[in-house]
Length: 257
Image (cartoon, rainbow, N blue to C red; front, side):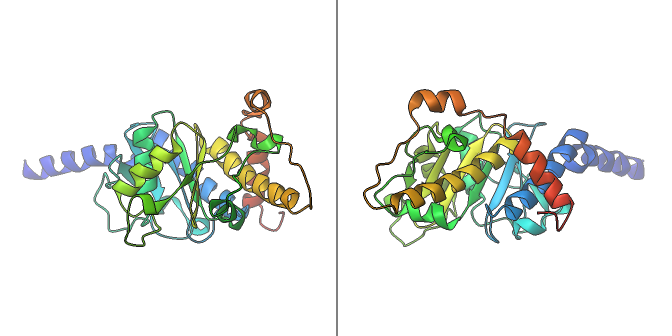
């Protein structure tokens, strides 16, 4: 009888794990692909990360263990609750800035995916008086100036990483209802309602930053920014599906980039 109980309990536990749930497995496979795509496209370096809210339980999310995004496999994915605590016992170490994701999901029920990266052009705008604003139709989703989160407003100990829930919460407040926020001297967060869209947004926000830097370098240049009506019309694009299709092919066919 004891053996039977143990077998039933083990089966019940297995049924609750992501690997045993088809919807979660599909999400995890897409998350692995997103890690590879964002690395391949230069959005993530060895320290950036991307997550997705669980379709099975919206109070959970999936995020890799503490490894470079370009090396992530399905076996590296950890399921967290919104307090950024692992749902299942694991010996894997989470990213030090995993709290970015949990606190944004907690504050924004509409958000289904989050990217945190450190692109140089984004860091540039995080430390200068000129705000990052959209000039390209592909980045129209930004709408207007991207807010900048300042860790010094929350802590005086010199911490510049989002290593706890307090800092994650403060960052989520700076993000507000918007699609993105910069982190002074550090990088950015981008959010969306799907992995495909967040990948497209993160990529084209970086492209827009490079384009704006180029325009600002022209002596006497008067910049024409995207206007609110243009942002409202162009923000959705095609859900960046054409870009996702291309990027997916490139990571699945090495050497074709």
